[in-house]
Image (cartoon, rainbow, N blue to C red):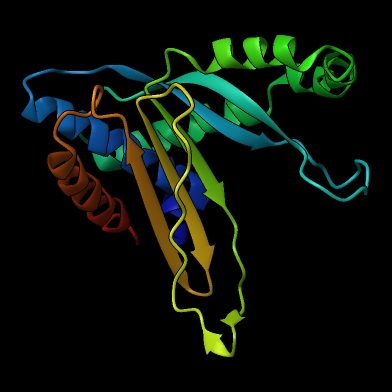
Amino acid sequence: MKAAGHVAGGKLNDAFVTGILLAFRRYHAHLGTDIEALRISMPINIRHENGPTTAGNAFVPARFVVGAATDDVLTLLCETHQRLDEVVHEPAYALVEPLSSVLNRLPATVTTQIFGSMMKGLDFQASNVPGSPIPLYALGHRIRSIVPFGPMAGAGANITLLSYEDRLDIGVNVDPAAVKDPALFMDCIREAYQDVMAVNP
């Protein structure tokens, strides 16, 4: 997966999102519908080398449109890399910290409504979570794999990738009102990632 991302000049995350887009495109094609783009929400890391060194997460839940108008895997991979690069370098993220300090002073009911409205109308949420690069143990037993499972929070699906040692596990959570044939969608997911990884040099 990392090598596939490098083909487009990007990283693992580009290959991850490309696989999702390809799967949704093929799923819709099986149902007789052609799609041009999808609405996605994804946490974007805003921590920089020269930024604060305080512990904890530093990300913004970005919401944006990404193209899905081609079946050519390499073309889609390159277009996805370009779009995600634009999102990561969005200048408005500089306003996140001052706005957060304002939002933290508002009642929880208000902030819940604000963020709840932001999550509506999404096709899917995607998260790429870095896990432990070394073996983990529970009561002396080695953990073989960790499968993530993220909440939909208003989206049609949540697809989360979690790395662990030399594994990548993907958890897929779908709303049956949006994805009415989950078995078909899972077939599309598997085939899409096989094709993404096949672009390796």
